[in-house]
Image (tube, rainbow, N blue to C red):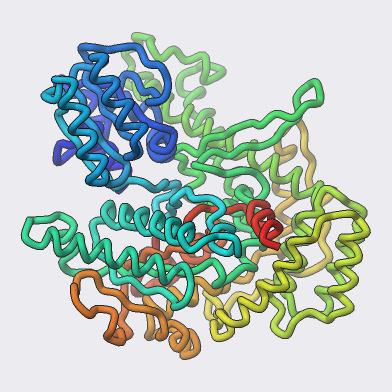
Length: 627
């Protein structure tokens, strides 16, 4: 939806723009234009479109508004910028300098009345107001990295909302910012949702502010024909706004899912993975891999357990090799690179092969990228023993788990101190009756003996109290109705199970897989999924979870008076937008998607978003600061 909205903007806000750019590109009347953005809007566009897509939409040059730009007096310009005073002044400056032929101004969210009047006044003084052809509020101020995952790109929100030194004004301002971001999401999804949120916390403030914004919108557009309301006549969507304190342990958990591991071990931001590698001189270099919008392997394997995804990358490579071998056999060349795409060979077979080459090359590039990512992940797994942390976190109430954890602490490694701290936090927050005091003291002594900061632990001890208050009635359940209970077993070490050479998987990953097969995670819901199920599918939820969510606030922006005074009926929904104030993570996203796709008779659609998608390291630094 966001991609379509951006493309519509690039085609000068014409209706009925075909999102299939290959068709559009062949039209003779394609209008060439310049695109000018700021840092924020560049991040929005770059996560859903690539330079090649911009070219097909007629954008010949794109640049940052703050940088010096050469004048293109015979070319129209499309601006896509944040609505603030600085950007307005820069646009007016361009008009004064006669930099472009015509001006199409698009703003990431809505332009305030004051700024609009100031803009109009400044433009009038240039005597070139006729050159401004459009001014549009685009309501696109959020970042989408997957079809059902978005972020408002507001890092450190948890710190701001929970810091005793944050004034009421700062907190209100942030909540207002979040509500505006969610309003943008609602405008893009073309559906006015019912809003549910727990009482007493930032989620309540955001829900009230968003409800008021949507109610004003409904009142102001009731008389006009409005696509948002027309497209929403039958099925209502529910927006569930939650506070981060619904569940802390999932933020620190070690996951065994491919996408979650990539996010946790390396940096995965705006669909770019940054993997540290050593240079020839011994320095460190960040190698970046883009997850392209057409990355078939990521789409099919991001949600799978790591061993399964590793098997699939091997299978994909074998399939590619077979296809390449078949082509070389048919055409008589020894290598695909020897084929000349410009050859005038008139055999039908040769023409078919030449047509296939670009697709094959693209597929090979994607497989190579994932091969490199797996190689890097495997080396991290081995050097930090990451499998052992995942293993102990599966069963926090077992006395054997605690003994095993103490053994892990004494592994002599210091490059995985943060992982050790995270696993202890998960055990502390997840154990039903609390950890024995002597065990806690032994772990604390280990960290202080290794001079590893544990100020975060002070805060974690407080977090458990929060969780007991907010979470005591939420009940987890198996996603497979108890059929599969493949728990972590055995005392596993990955070293020696695989070999690595030059960043490639030596002899494939088959030997590794046989060693870690028994580490497949038990499929169960986590607190956020329990809440979503209770609201979306009350008939199949537990009584305990229903009682918890029955107390949630209920706003219906379509009912313009007294909508939140009525106690809501329990009703089923097929679509939802789930939003966490204070930082989200891929583990919650994957758990929600797994639940949604496991509803075979009545599939659910769940979009997940947060103020920012936070890595365990980032959240650790936030709570250390708060401690």
